[in-house]
Image (cartoon, rainbow, N blue to C red; front, side):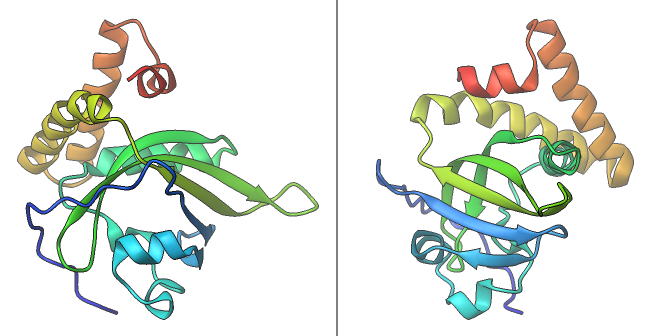
Length: 172
């Protein structure tokens, strides 16, 4: 497995019609990656297939976002999220992601599809300070407690604004 890249300040942007698609098993291991995913990850298909999806996780992303994501999709619900990913050269790229469960004929979850497209610059401006505060909480507290406090921060923020996570994400 390739070592994680050191983040740089170089940003890659998806084109308006770019669509990143991937499929994972229940544990988040990549079983399919489309050409756009390969292009932005700057990895070969054989480096992505069989790798954990977090191979592209940027260190600026709070772990609490992924806790929320996993809690949602494991219950059989879809989720939308803004995610900052990292390419193998350290460049970053933002995506607006939709993750949804994949079912077998008996309605058992067997994996997940993720469809990602270019987010608006305005949405990134709105979500970045939220993520920065969540990450600060996680780093200052550490471990599971830090993640729980980060989730608590997001929950309180949403409550104070009279909205749900989904409403907030879809409104920005």
